[in-house]
Length: 150
Image (cartoon, rainbow, N blue to C red; front, side, top):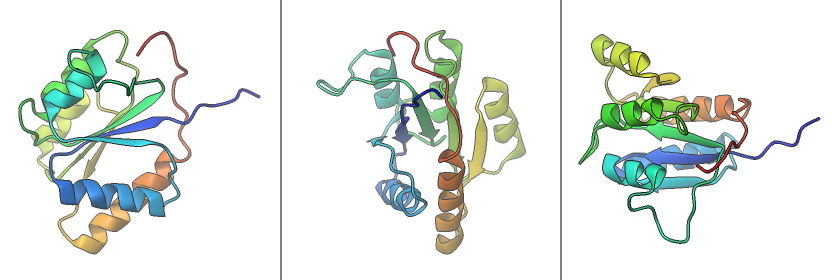
């Protein structure tokens, strides 16, 4: 049986309150993975592609990205497109986690290669439950193995 490496979760969310709720409810669901929070699309691209990655905190694979669409600098669509268009990052699973449920935006995300689209409920209790359910799902998925530098 192969040994698995836990995935680092990259949370790209500009709302600090949403970011705290997401992390808190993932933890409540039993997710113990390392969670790295970035608050803009540009910071995510910089970290993933090395332009201005955080010093001393190298990105290792496997990696899972939780991505909001409404971000400063670069929006989530641009980040998703960059991840899926680049050979070394295209296999990184991307979960869109956003407030929109616009069918055109959902379709666009899947066309760009997102793996899962989750609409954040407006209601606090439903939001918490949705994130806990996502956490349960994340705890059972298998990710592609590390292959080369990430």
